[in-house]
Length: 319
Ligand SMILES: NC(=O)c1ccc[n+]([C@@H]2O[C@H](COP(=O)([O-])OP(=O)(O)OC[C@H]3O[C@@H](n4cnc5c(N)ncnc54)[C@H](O)[C@@H]3O)[C@@H](O)[C@H]2O)c1
Image 1: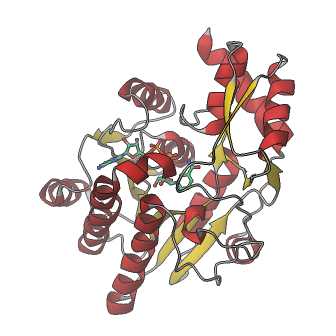
Image 2: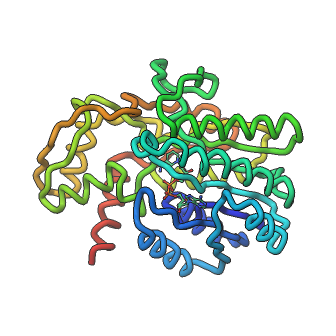
């Protein structure tokens, strides 16, 4: 399959890229090496690792650059699929940079949808959404049919907008598009500012870890290989317009997570308790029934196994 992949230098994108390369897909990668959350060097290293797995072309283009993307697609297309993972992620920074998040995650997504339509990929369009669209939903587990009309951060609102743009495009023009609501993804290569990676680093360095709230908040953590399997399944099984939860199928309380990371690292844990952050939600919990039934999605990695694999990776990259 010939795939246009946006965000292919990022955490989830580079893991998907390696999987596509391993199975022989031809991949054209777009990434702007955007640095709101973490430095370019991390993405350069991810690209170098991907290069060891196979050939692909990489284009440093911003997804808001309509002319640039259209020219690239005209030269390298047509594509069988477009997997759009490029975005500014992260709930907390979006509170201070709402219009920047809007530009990239909303305007950029419409541009990508237009490129897919113009260059053959509208029958397999995969878009990264997020569990954050559930906002302060208190009904658990979160199902795709739940009300998502109350986002609590600009990031969440931008991902809801992505889903709405995709739905409108599908209504007007048909095709197949899957919006994948990822639930907190972790594992080797995780973004350095995300909780598990940050906690591992701080505990290893003997520093205290900032804990927002009293530790009772819960997250449905999803191991990177399970997410990649979900992205690949959605790419391989076009099903009209669909929204899918991709979660780990188990909620872990923050305090339990911190304890488990401490046990994995094998060092004492010091916690600095801080107030809950604006935009944060207290719980995420995925109902993955639909993805299981329609994509054969089956999260396989327990948090203990996932932490242990991530710790092995973390130690390897320091040496
Ligand atoms: N990691 C998670 O837990 C999680 C959870 C829910 C949703 N998501 C979504 O999954 C996708 C991938 O997330 P990630 O964790 O790999 O983040 P990431 O930041 O590692 O990857 C995103 C990539 O997009 C690129 N990018 C940013 N702005 C761009 C622009 N204007 N043009 C082109 N490229 C641009 C970045 O340079 C980066 O390489 C994102 O859409 C994110 O919102 C992630």
